Length: 84
Image (cartoon, rainbow, N blue to C red; front, side, top):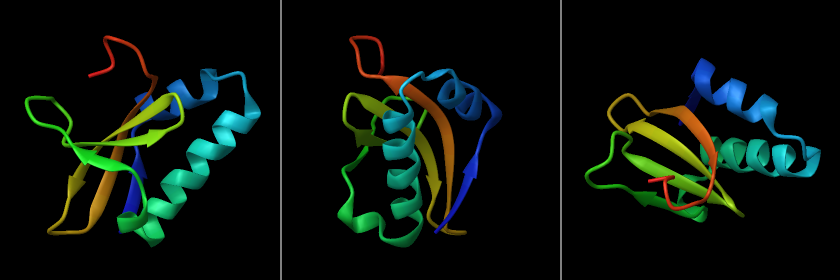
């Protein structure tokens, strides 16, 4: 599966101050490209994005197109009551 980062997600990732967290998120997205079945990915219903990837206290919100095998990384957010 190919990964494409949206500008909004890139900006949100750059704003994070903890380099270890940034590395964990990048590693998880890279693993998504290789083996998506081994990650904590959940389909979302009633949300503007189709899936979320859990990485510790952070959520990577995705739109996955399984026909052309592309995952669009839309947002990277810290988990709270308003994340999804």
